[in-house]
Image 1 (cartoon, rainbow, N blue to C red):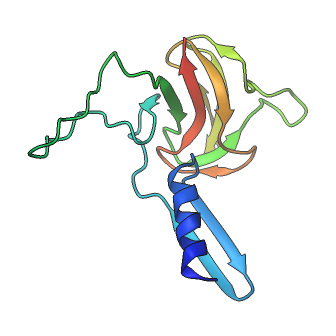
Image 2 (tube, rainbow, N blue to C red; image 1 turned 45 degrees about the vertical axis):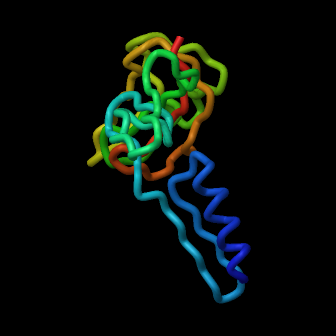
Length: 151
C-alpha cells in the first residue's frame, strides 16, 4: 500500500463519525483510531466544533462559537463500558431507529455491564439521525451511540 492511499484513508476517517478503523490487505494490517473522543455526557457537540473558543493566534480572529452556530448535531454517548442492545429482547423491535423523534427520558437502548442491564435514556427531546453502533457490539465509556438533532 502506498503513502497516498494511507493519507487518503486518514482523511476519510478524520471526516467521518468512525472512531476506529482496521484495514487488512494481504499481510499488511493498518488500524486507525481517533484520540479526541467527545466528552462523556449524554449529549456532546459534534466532533470538530470546539466547546470553548481557543486562544486567538496573533493576526487571526478567534473562531466564533455560540448560538449563531448552525451545526446543532449532538451525540448520545455510552456512560459505561458494556454491550449495546438496540431492543429489549432478540425478537422485539428496536427502541429507536433513524428518523424517530425521542422525548426526554425515553429509553434509546440497553447497555449490559457485569450482567446488569442498564437502560440508556435521552436527556432531551431529539431526532435520531444515525445509529453509530450495531446490536450486541461492545462499547467503550464515552463512545458515541447515536447522532441526534435537538428538537
